[in-house]
Image 1 (spheres, one colour):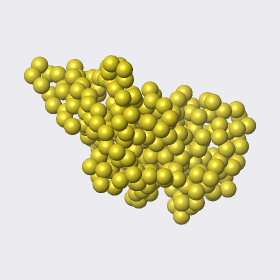
Image 2: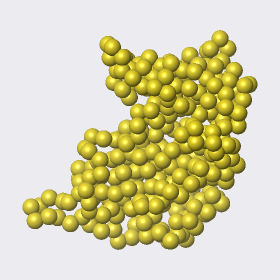
Image 3: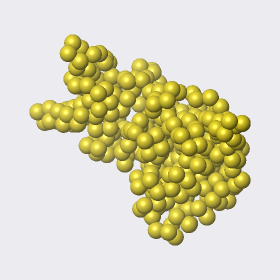
Length: 309
């Protein structure tokens, strides 16, 4: 469902001008923002997990299209939530900051969950820029048709620019979403070189890859108490990439869990992360993982500064 989207003009030589712009991908935790960004970019630029607050930075992914020619810069954001710590407040500010200067906003809803207070709070925040908001109803592969229709009906009262049901996992509806986004982007220059899929530094990408491996292995509150610092990335003689990283936790008891009996957890995470890192760097990787305790790091601004948030 859509309004009157503009059609790209055709130049005198028959070619279409490039359309380009920034699209903030927002929503409450676990609606599939990172999965959508990865699907639109065509490669993994943002880690995913079923746990809330997986994304802790504004990750920019670049999707280059040929027909029509376009460059979509997608800004993946943390899930908007009620903050309980200084870290949570900073993550919410990241979402707010991502809305400044973007050309469009893709607001994600979960097709299998009713619209809740968090969704309505975000919709209210986006009301002043309603003509630049596309509502994306995600996870249609897991939902019944009447659930999808119910989500669309619930959101229709917000009077946003367009409503598109999709599945980031199966790809259903992604072509329609791409067309909707491109039709609403202004004509402009390419912001990134062709072939570039993200502007994130290697240190951030490597740290996120390692943290992702822990997210699938840890229980209860521990994933939220864990941060990753990449201390060094260097290429050594022979082509091996040396990556030194520190796993930061809040309590001494958590340190033992992260390391595991006889170092088993650290070894398992290191092996899995190394495989991903070798794909990232296209070279053999030596991963040096260490663990340290920073008491209550996510509650103290000085520690958050030191950890790079």
